[in-house]
Length: 241
Image 1 (cartoon, rainbow, N blue to C red):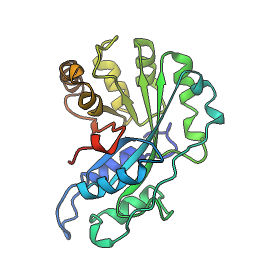
Image 2: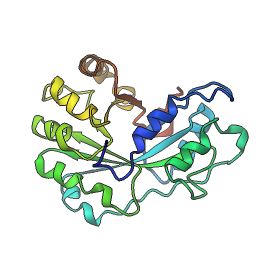
Image 3: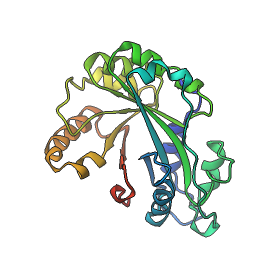
């Protein structure tokens, strides 16, 4: 069980997205679980996700440094834009996912389901400990991710981090090793590791390093418990499934 989470959001998404409703059109449910929150671009991101055929996306807010130590004062800035709600554009499991994630407001339950994600950049044990308070924030985030920047933070995140996702800076050389025991400690608790494509799109120089790191990550995880996201800062960086 994943007792550290207020909502087992990612686990539900993985289970539902891999399910096939045999009575309906058999097709997978694709999600982009990392689109940077920008109130000026939010509507465009949701519209593009709909045209790409995504079941939903997660608007991401990133905090780091002193912001983590003041996490109790943080207020989620994400206000989901209202998207068309035509039933014709909804996937076969749209209703099940919306109900399971307790999405009830009009903005969150349009044709594209809109989630809130919080990513916390952690550089020491104090940051990881502070991040464990994220589930108590109101309004709540549906997903919480940790991005460790060194070995100490990585091991702490894997062993006792209260998060759904561990996100790594894959376009740069990692300052720590992806040890099997650390990977297993996190995945056995239901967590997933993230491969973020946006950095490779923005920086051609980092693509080779990213490919090397992705190979290491996939080897360490055996290709399981990995999610692929855009990490888009702008809708133009989003990619179709």
